[in-house]
Image (tube, rainbow, N blue to C red):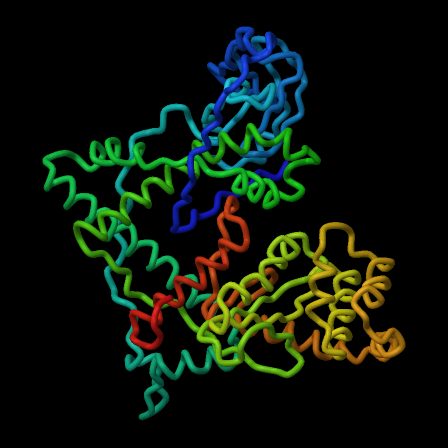
Length: 466
């Protein structure tokens, strides 16, 4: 079983309007009956010898559904007060997992508990790590090597690295930037909260305990659906309806508290103490080609470059947002697509078909049709040209001659130069965007990336923010 890795949560908070329902007629008799007692989970006991978890509690029902970090588990035994599920315990990395038991769609029909697996129940006392040498990183002008009377500087070594392994260089620089940015963010946030706590005469923990819960907002159904879609095969075939209680529990226990904390920090930045992360992410210079399909104005201040595979379910999830982005940010956004097949022969066939559609100026209709839900097999690829009005004979000749293959190879080489190994990957004005939070619908993810870039340009004095 592949357990879903945890991703960083995005920097914006959902807003919801309350739903008010007026009851104008008496409720039917069935609805006035007492609701069933709530599901209760009291304890979870792992057994490494049998690769099982035993769940103790109450009111589990006849057919409970159990997930561990949103991965459905096989139920071996189901009683009203005890459940036994199969889990490959030896394969799980040590951490705390969220286990959820559900018997139906209502809030009283589910219960969750955090389970430490692969870690001792009582962690040993922490021992201080040995101090690392406090040597600063070398400056560009520092000496890297000497040959006779010639000194080779760090800057020269970096230029050689960039020339011989551009993808490796930019990947390392991105990772270095990301680790520094995270550390700077932790330090700055801790300082911000400590200042506010001191001003109120309380501890940081007490401050957060008082302020964060008040800002928690229930995420909408679109977040549940987006989280479900992001899981892909990890749902093990379970439907959205079946998974919804576990998805809701995950959002309530993981995402909503973190977003509420971020909302509070953003409020403090606006009303108390200024906080700004000044580090800039590495930028790559994007190669331009007439063979790249483009949506949007050529002079748009925000250039979004997508590397994607038309066979990829992950790309199919984000693809529909591209046309809507260009319409929403008229004149301010350009979207460029670069083919990056990753799933073997089928991906290569879809990429070649897309390039041949672009040769007739019809890539985007092909793209939108190919990215619809469903299997993009050989039959579907043959049907799309007729659906979008391509010259079938010219399309077939393009495929037969292999005219598109060189362009696809070039796109793969280009991705490697930018430190991109697979798609979907998003570059915003040459900066690699972070992966989207699982609960965030793709259009909102792109919208926030674009708005952040417009704001960044406004701060730099280049363009007015919208």
